[in-house]
Length: 279
Image 1 (cartoon, rainbow, N blue to C red):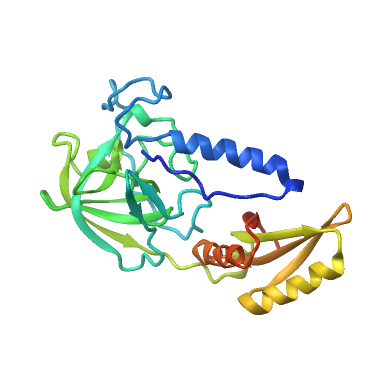
Image 2 (cartoon, one colour):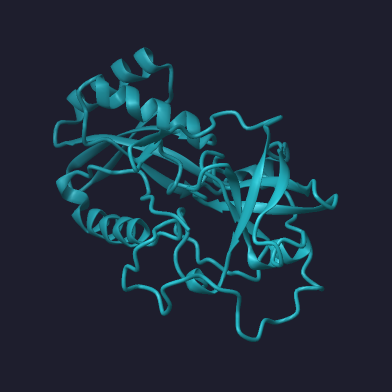
């Protein structure tokens, strides 16, 4: 569905293996485009179609909204076909009306924008600007049928269309027969759990700013950046080198904003890392 990459990362020399991995994953996501009209050679078929012998989806339940941190991939502003798209920063209360379409067999088993595998039998969907993942209630205003899907991809990039449904979701809303339908979508937001034990195992984000062999200079820089950006800082030591880290952050959108500020302050190689802290 998507032609988007995960956020670009300029990683320091001592983390070169990570850079290679990120580059490979980013390239794979970039060339996986369900919105593209030109076969890329990655797909078994040129035109998207329904499965030849589809499994029954009657038993498949709606997506179950839950708190999830935003994905590392697929959440950067982007430009496609000369048009700029800005990711929604605060999705609570978001509503939109327009056309829904669906995508199926051609993209089944390929990467979505955030690096997950597209499953046409899951209750998922693609949207141009909602943060990934997001949960949305979709109402087919032509027949009043509703369902809940999880956004994990980008698209559809056609005039007037606001959401691309998985095969299963399109079946639930009776969109398979017509191909498109008039819909209203509404974001369902779930707050971060307050329970400390649950929170301790949630993925968190940190920003690696720089690496130096001089501990005193790195500590001074950490203090300076911490005061200017109003964030926590800490050092990680490795083979007589000291890595300056910012965070941790629970909100990925906030992490991205801090990363932009760090780069503007003269550290273009800074990048975001994902981790799970166990307390």
